[in-house]
Amino acid sequence: MAAFFVRGCPRRQRGGSRTVSVTTLTRPVQSAETQPETAGRKRPLGASVGLWMWPALATLVIAYVRIDGPQLGTDELVTSDVGRRSLGQILAMLQNVDAVHATYYVLMHGWMAVFGDSETAMRMPSVLAMSGTAALVALIGRRLFDSRAGMCGGLLFALIPVVSRFAQEARSYALVVLAATLATFLLLRALDAPRRWWRWAGYALCVAVVGLLHLIALTVLAGHLAVVVHRAREEGGVFWRFCVAALAGAAGVIPVVVLGTSQASRQLFWVPEPDLWGLVGIWPQVFASGLCAGVVITLAAMARRTERRDALLLCFTVALLPPFVLWAASHGDVSYFRFQYAMFTVPVWAVLAGAGLARAARSWLTVGVVLAVVGLLVLPDQRRMRGEFEHDVPHNADYMAAARTIEKYYHSGDAAVYVKGAPWMLDQGVRYYLRPGLKLREVFVAKSAAENNELFPVYCPEPVTCLRGESRIWVVVPGSDPDPLNAVPAGQAAALRAQYTTSGTVPLSGLTVALLERKR
Image (tube, rainbow, N blue to C red; front, side):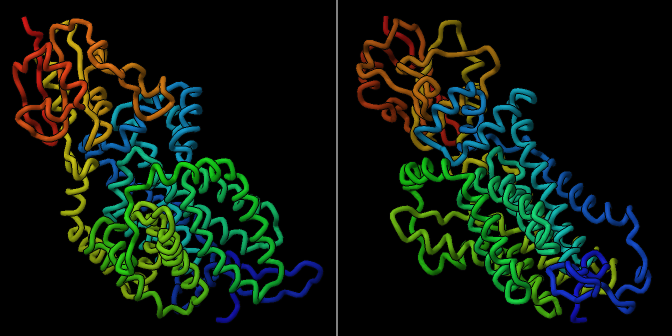
């Protein structure tokens, strides 16, 4: 059928009574052959709600399983540290570092004030964001293809290992995925009725949210632009409306752009420049499973036989253009080519895979069997995602065991020396897992990270002057050197060796805990 309709009704052009057919990026009316039981009847409310509810619930349940299993990783420890600071301290820190995460930190500051800073509490916003994304996948799939494709896409999204992995991460990535997917959905809504300015206003607002959560996620606009250019050839006015909305949204993040670009070289210096193979090698990482990537991309390829060429254009451009833009932009002074920054493409891959599955499977029984097989295939990856140290690869630092060791042998008046290195949030990791109320004076810290408006503290320039005659000092260092003081900075190590002896060490995964006692 050449003509496409909005929600089953023909669109009427303004200024006339004649009904005309306009090609839009919406779900076509299904023929009696493809849907004989519902043709000509309004979709039941329960069916409409169930379309997005079941994928959302499936994602929620899968993501919640063992949500507190992995210990907090380095980035999550930053969230914990910054989120517990005062709003003034957060804003002061953003002038120096992590401006691109400003919105997320402010959101988490409010969330943690209400729900606390437990692992589960800090990760729940990400769980809810991924669940909301699953609902949007189903709605986009219905709008572009049909309800069956939407349901398949939403349920496939719930099974993808990277969804669970970053639903259980106390960082902004899941919220970015949600915001970028919502922007795509709102673009479709705006293209349904391009003369309704409030739809473009909603799209512009969402674009701003995407940029505020993560600047690099604005590369989703590359895929949106390609679709709008294609649509503009058939309907005038769409292109400039899109440009106004996109630019208005992007203008809202200019302060973050200014600060973020000035801090980029400091924060991303370690990201290597990608070679040509990176455009291929990134996909197993994006899905957190090479096997899952192969299954999803294969199902997505099966959707190419559909007659919805406009829908395919939208999905493939949003899925493929942003990673290519990232790759091209990563050949300058700073490389941005990390799989986390392309993760917002996963929902559109799920939409395409859902369409391919719906086209290949002729019954819901077949769909259920395929989903069950996919679930079994990715089960090892799902279990790996919930490993104790999965969020701290490759350091595998056991902060919890270090804290329990200190608690077990703690004496009143004990002090501590935490040596940052690899991992560089070691001090925050041990402090986080110490029981509430147990605080050790960090003998060489002159000014805390919060007081320094940074992620790092200021250390005493002359370490020996910072010792106050403590009888016992706990030293926690990365690695497993038999002499833990070898990992301590030279000046601090010399001060400790002169006044203390090592009375015992406990090697742990990724860390060593040592107890020093003052010489008599």
